[in-house]
View 1 (cartoon, helix red, strand yellow):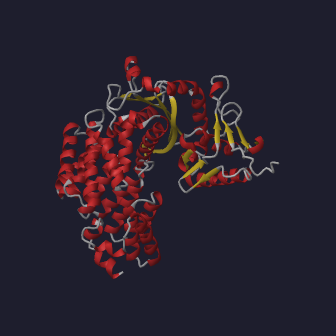
View 2: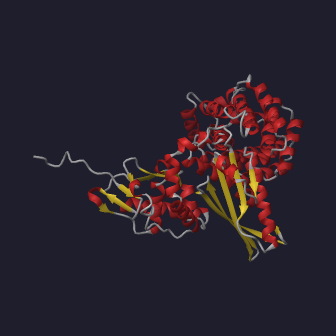
View 3: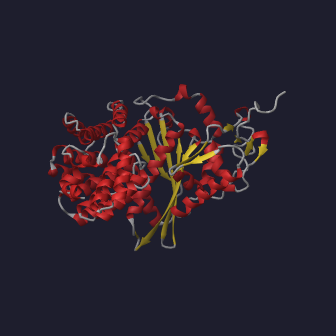
Length: 536
């Protein structure tokens, strides 16, 4: 007699093709009645690994809300979903940075029905960003399926003749001269940023020849529509991928205008940074990164801003594969930066000469690139100590793009070294704003900490490095300086807690290591703060 103990419980199933349904064991329909809660589950179900960052979900479903309000709305939605699925086991989980469907959750998209039913029917959350995403997701579903089925026939390997094509255009003819002018500013900014990131074929307000589209391995379409009204310029930007024009990202920005000019130009720089960072990130969610040099560069650079030896080695392997192909000058510059990380983080002095040679080769090949000049400036500062050279390179970077977060970061470092504290504070603040949206934005929070230490504001330094640690709990430099700033403030509880976390990442670490002459806390030594730490 079977007493039921051996009966296997069916997993939760999310039906995404046709009528969207959440089926719990015994086929109970527990689909949330709230539209945005349905949309949260739907977005996770069709995402890579059934996982998305909280920021992405907020940008899709609460795009017009303030960040703090959007965060609270998502938190409540996740809580309501869990409550509604009580009794179904673990279905949806989250941490500080991400939300995901558990591995036990099955996603049923019934591929045999392709073309007969829409994806995600009854999912219609009232948000313009979600509406854009859903429309393109449905429209491109069949094309995407065919593309994935035939990917091995059509995709080109990195460095092949296919290459990357970026097409940036305003999609409506402007009758408003002011709006047309501002659109031109944004188009130029996006073009410069893509070029700095390593894209070599960028078409602004023109279309490439059909043959070029057919032969491209990677295509990014960027379309924007804008309007000037009520003293503001409002922009809606959409990004699409490949010939099938699959949806990548949608974003909006509304900027005040005074006397016919932007009153806050940093917001435009931040919007451009965020747009490109999100576009590159989203592209990787459905295309193998190895097929696009542009995506490889984005992944490698993010790794280098959180240096563990394994991540530096992985980034170097990626970059070495690009030094003879598309984006080669940018790849060389990032390789130079990788060698700089080896010198500063791991004491590998043999890498110093390599760093100099690599960035010089990058400068020779592409002298007008703001990113390359900024990275070369950092190498001159921290490897050779040639501050005149570093200043000249930072100035070149700013002259080429004074809104580029890497250029601003290099210029801020020069101001610090020269003792121009007010300039350093302004540049560091602008750099942090311009870097908003980058996956490694914690590096700019860390710069705010260094600038505050230089002007003796230990409380501001601790606040900034707390934010850096919050944005990346695994960043060891942030933990080192959180310990240091807390010791300077006699905040022993925070210092001890940070020391425990750092010891988990650096086995054997003790606070006295901060005083060692070869320990990587260069700014503390340069500012003469090591003795103060020991007194603390």
